Image (cartoon, rainbow over all chains, first blue to last red; front, top):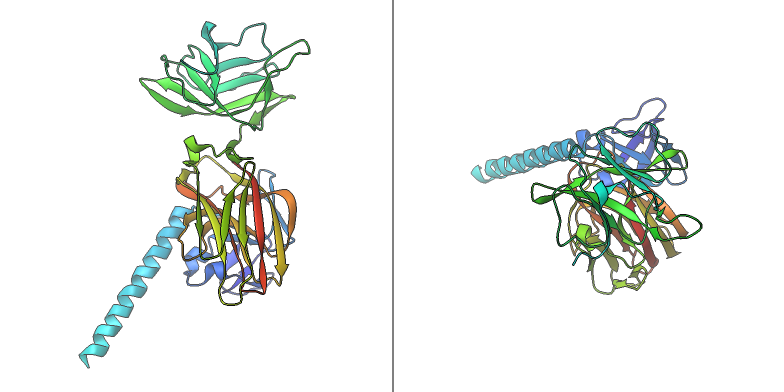
Length: 94
Length: 262
C-alpha cells in the first residue's frame, strides 16, 4: 500500500505538500484510522523520540495507543464481512 | 534454602558494602553512588539478589532478580575488591504475594533505569518469557545455540523458506518504551527477503509474524544493537523475529544475541 509520511514520519493515506510516498506492505488491508496511527521510518533515516532516544529505519511503530488502532481495524474488518454477506445475500436472492 | 545474597538489617546494604537500598515513593534527594531506589510504600524488611524466586520470603522482602546482563551492574564490594551483580528487575513480597516494583540505581551522578532482559547469550529468562519457540516452515531452521538464537532461511527455487522465533509467553509491554535487539544479519541476493524483529500479536506457522511494532532490513547487518519504539504499545505481545527468503533470489540468516526492554 502507498502511504505518505510527514516530517515527523507520521503516516497518512493521502498525499499532501511536504509528505513523501512509500510502498509499505504492512498496511495492506488496513483501514485509514489504523494506518494513520503509525509512524514509518524509511531505511537509512533516523527519528528522535521526544525523550531523546533515536531510532534508525526501517522501523514501523504506532504513535497512537495500539489497542485503539486494533479496535478500529477490527471494526473495519467486521464491516467488510457484513457488507460481503449482505452482497452475497442480495445476489442469491436474484 | 534461598539461593542468593540475603541482606538483613532493614535492607540498607550495610557500611561494608558498596551499595545502598532505599525504599520510598520519591527518589532520594542526595543519593550516594550505587543507591538502589525501590518505588514502594511498603517498608523493606530485607532484600535478596537472586536469579530464582526466594523460597522463604518474609513480608516486605525485596527480591532483586539478577541475570547475566544489566543496564546498571553493581560492584558489591569496596577497597578494590569486586563482586559484580546484574540486577534486571525487582519484586517485593507483600501480603503473601510477589508484586513487581520499579527500581533504579544512582550511578555516575544520574539515575540509571533498569533494562529488562528477555534473552542474553543463551539465557532465555524463562521466568518472564517462558522460553522461546521456533516457528518455521519446511526448510527454515531455528537453532538455539549456547550463546545465540540462529535463524536460517536458505534459498529454494520452489518455496519461500521461513524461520521465525517468538517468546513462548506474551509479555506485558505497558511499562516499556523501547525494545532492543542485538543481532547480526547475512543476506544474499536481492532485497526481496523479509527480515524483521519486534513485537507481534501473533506468530503462525504459515506466515511471517503479525508485527505490531518492528524494525527491519533488506541488507546484511554486522553485529549491532537495533531498537524499536514500543512506547504506544500497552498490554501483551510476543517478542518475535523472522527471516523469510524470497525463493532462491534472496536468502540468508539472522543471529540474535540479546533482547531487552527499557
